[in-house]
Amino acid sequence: MYKLIIRPFLFLFDPEKVHYFIFSLIRILCKFPFVPSIFRNLYQVNDKKLGRTLFGLHFTNPVGLAAGFDKNAVLYNELANFGFGFIEIGTVTPKAQIGNPKKRLFRLKDDEGIINRMGFNNDGVEAVIKNLKKNKHKVIIGGNIGKNTDTIPDEYTQDYLEVFKELHPFVDYFVLNVSCPNVGSHAKLNDKKYLLELITSCQNQNNLFQIKKPILLKIAPDLNNEQLDEIIELVAETKIDGVIASNTSTTRDNLKVSKERLTEIGYGGVSGQPIKSQSTKVIKYLAEHSNKSFPIIGVGGIHSAEDALEKLNAGADLVQIYTGFIYEGPGLIRKINKAILNAPTL
Image (tube, rainbow, N blue to C red; front, top):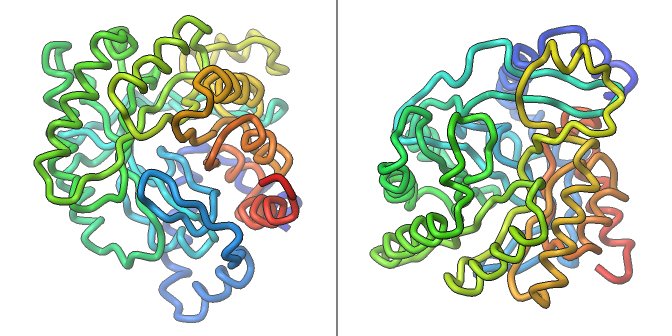
């Protein structure tokens, strides 16, 4: 029903407006006592065989919602009813920021993809904490954190540390987002020497808390083998808890959309089916060349159960969906979990 009726209707309108409309609709529907249980019956798969334990956390299933969907942690309690094993909120920055000018979100219908240049639009860490205080603990919550766009390079680490410190009591794990192409100059964030400084600073801050939270690094799908080798070395040196592969891509090769339309859209990161192979290749390289020495969360172009299995077979321990959630609907979560149960090697 979603792909035949609901999606064609929603795709008639501006994607960012549709996003907020869907948010409002889900919140309203979930206020009716019987609706959350209907969603759970439709989409959840409850089987202990789906459970995964990674970096000290137990996930009821390996299918998560990637960062960017619930930026301000306003809908995670309701979204938990759709069967996610974990939900990543953010990207959260110290101060609220409106992000890049609109229009900044574009569908690539023929490619089953999205181009976005949102620019870390969010309400800031204080507002996010206010929302996280309403946590009903239905699902594991990850906190994806970043810097404010106008922060000067010398103060990047200070931004990350501020959000890390404030958000620490309210999330189950952290993700250092250093790979978003839509937040102005981010060249420093891809420098190994700086990443070592950033990760070490966050780990030192983490050690000040009685309960330490896992820290993961989110990387781009466009890294070459030499850069991926540096990531493997960085993980070994810092003992960071894991890697998320991958963020959106700046590559626009082999797209069905016309060059004229791409020129009209302008810059932004590509997500969805166009980056499926890229992200899987990165996962496979990291897993093989590190001898699977650290956990990997696979994300990028998962639009079917087969896509998810491909990521897991390549070396991912967990997967996340975002664009696939938009194109395929919430039934995708159940399909993936069912397929994992039926896959003898997973």
